[in-house]
Structures are given as C-alpha cells and as structure tokens.
Amino acid sequence: MNAQNGKQIWLEAWLEGKPLDTSLCKVNHPPYRFVFLGAPGVGKGTVAQLMAERLGVAHLATGDIFRAAKSLPQDKLSPALREAIGYMQRGELVPDETVISLVRERTACLHWPAGFVLDGFPRTVPQAEAFQGILVKEGLKLDAVLNFELPIDFIIARLSGRRTCPKCKAVYHIVNNPPKQPGVCDVCGTELIIREDDRPEAIRVRMEVYKKSTAPLIDYYESKGLLKTVVAKGTPVEVYARTLNVAGIV
Ligand code: AMP
Image (cartoon, rainbow, N blue to C red; front, side):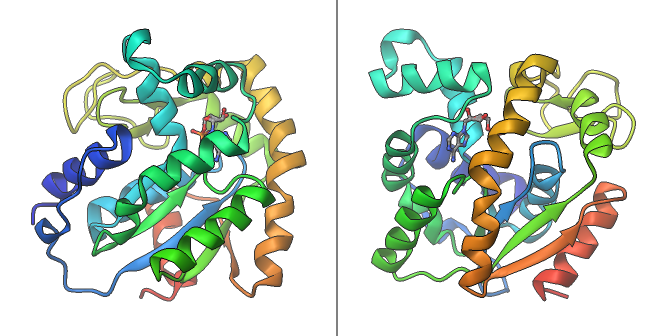
C-alpha cells in the first residue's frame, strides 16, 4: 500500500462516511491506537499527520469533519451538522450528542489495520465515557492517551503561523514547517488557507474552552492508567520522534 492511497481511503470514510475497505491496508506492524490530547496549536495534528504518512495509521480528527462539512452545499447537511458548523466558527464546542453520534457512524475507521490516532476527540469527560463504551462494543483497546504540553506563548506563535490545505488537510507553519512553494500544498498543489478558527477572537475562545472542558480529561485518563506526556517543544520531526519514544513504538 502506498501511504498516500491508504490515506485517501480512510479520509473519505472519516470525512464523508463512505464504506471502508480495510483489506487495502497492508502494514507490517500491529495496530497502534492512540488518543492525542493538548491545547489547540500544540502541534498534535502535525504529529498525527506524520504518523499517518510514515506508519499508515488513520488520522481521525473530528474538527476535519466539521470543516469538510462547511464546504458542502447547505441542503446536503443534516440540521445537526449545520448547527455544529456554527459552534465551530465561533470557536465553541459542538454539543456532545452531535459529536458522539458522528463518531458512532464512523466506527469502521477505528478498525483500520494500521491503527488510528484520534485528534480532537474525546474533548469532554462525557465524550470520553461514551467513547469507552464504543471501544468496548467494537472489541478495541487504546494503547495510550498522549498529552502534548507546550507553554502558551509557543502555542500562540504556532497558531498564528499555521496554514492548512482545505483539500487533503495537510498542515504547515510559515516558519517551522513551510511548504516547498509558499502558500501551496506540497501533497496536492491546492492553495493553503488560514483556518477560520485560527483568527484571534476564535483562538481566545478555544483556549478558554480547552481549560474548562478538555483539561479535565487529563485526570480522567490518568485515573485509567493510560496517560503519557509528550513535551511538544521543537521541530515537527523532533516532536514526532519524541512521541514514538513516549508511545513505546521505537
Ligand atoms: P479542532 O480542529 O480539533 O481544533 O476542532 C475545531 C472545532 O471543531 C472546535 O473548536 C469545535 O468547535 C469543533 N470540534 C471538533 N472536535 C470536537 C469535539 N470532540 N467536541 C466538540 N467540538 C468539537
């Protein structure tokens, strides 16, 4: 399997709910199953992207589903998804029931043979409890929950320089991880954008929401003995190498 083809298959299943043919994934390692936690801008999406490229794992980001839904015609969206886009644009969390039912519709992706990294879900304790039920039902177990830590001034610098590909979801940074040609995606040639929720007003809301709703997940997963910490300072490749180390992959 070519890593890029593999990505296309699970990405369509994740973003659009298309059927997933797992027999197309050929890897020579056991499935890795992780949840990534950390404030917006900490760089966990970039590490997840590298894990997808290099190990073939499915990078499952709930935020990507909402952003993909935003570019669809309004009449193609369910009322719940239309409502969810409004929350996302304001930087607020989408209601738990909406996110949980969305993940329930996409449990096939959790069975991707190379494994998965969940990025941005669960985001609250009720979501984590519901996800635990989903894992039990699907007969799956998490290897670990990795918590990415970075001081706030580093986070703000990362968010303000972030550029995203609206098509293939690749993430760049104008200084730390620039595309080969400025403003253009290396992978698919699409023009890069600044995410709407990376605007300063939305960033402030997202940081507050993180402290209130997502930080309690650290205690939740610590109490389950699953939590491991990754120091997220350094270049993407350095943080990636540290992540594999903490995760016990190398
Ligand atoms: P992200 O790309 O993970 O920062 O997500 C972008 C936005 O999508 C968030 O600010 C929320 O509005 C929404 N979102 C993504 N994942 C979740 C989730 N698990 N629970 C609630 N809202 C979410």
